[in-house]
Amino acid sequence: MLKMHDKQKTLTIIVPCYNEEESIRLLYDEIMKVCATDTFKDIYTNILFVNDGSTDNTLSTILKMSLEYKNVNYISFSRNFGKESSIYAGLVHSKGDYIALMDADLQDPPGLLEQMYLSIINEGYDCVATKRISRKGEPLIRSFFANIFYKLINSMSKTEIVNGARDYRLMTRQMVDAILSLKEYNRFSKGLLGWVGFNVKWLAYENIERIAGKTKWSFWGLFAYSIEGILAFSVVPLAISSILGILLSFFSFLGIIFIVVRTLIFGDPVSGWPSLATIVCFIGGLQLLGLGIIGQYLSKTYLETKNRPIYIIKESNL
Image (cartoon, rainbow, N blue to C red; front, top):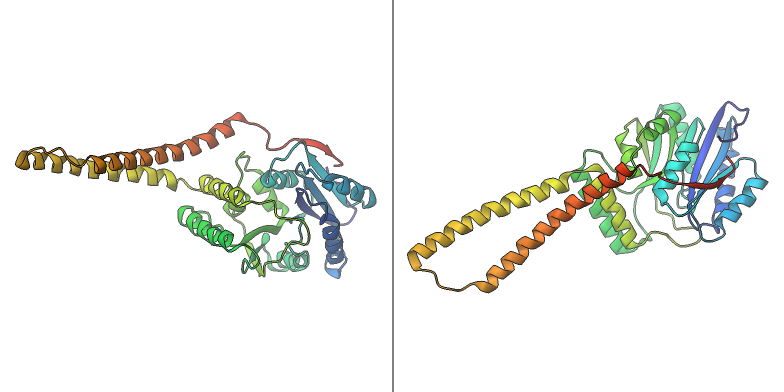
């Protein structure tokens, strides 16, 4: 359990970390500047770093900080489990009245915490989330495919996933408990946070470059993550596969009728083998596509039934 303070309210800030040794001290200083304002004078702020199997000096830096500052706690995984596991572990071990999620690279401006907190207290929101107005500074191809992804998933899913949404948000304990009630192994937090509902306010801000280090997300990593999101919140790909099968069967039936009629009228000249081979390959490709879609859903079901832990903690000071 997190070390609690004798003040009335507690704010827990969860920071997933993977090879962020250059930025976590800077992040801590910026958070403490915000929490030193009058808005947070009656709030005890506790920062929970979740080390996701970092291979640099992230863990040793966090260990030193936990000895220097009483409000620093940490969880360190036995290996790299991914950001989704880090977020879930942080939520599980957070005990604050208010819980914030924030990246370690300072692309999530801590200065927004004050506005987020006041919106919850004064306006009755359960969550204040953030989104980027633009993707300035990102590679154009990444921005293009990101926009395509959001259009696709929102057209397929009943759960709205806001374009440009960040994981950076402040939530009430009630909302966090609702998220923790979702025990699924294959987690897509942006979708889960939207699925639970509650009153959410969105704050928009311009994209901010990393303060240090390099992004851990490759293009293919983001692509795989987008597939994860679509599979987690939509069965439309299965429907598309079924519709394609019905359409192909229908046109194949029409083709058979055409061939029979042509043979009866004009005989049966041997021709068209190249086009026939092309059609066979095309249909075979669609069949493999359909099997691949079904296989993806089956693989997710298989992983869920294994009941493996979402993460394994190697050490912690909780």
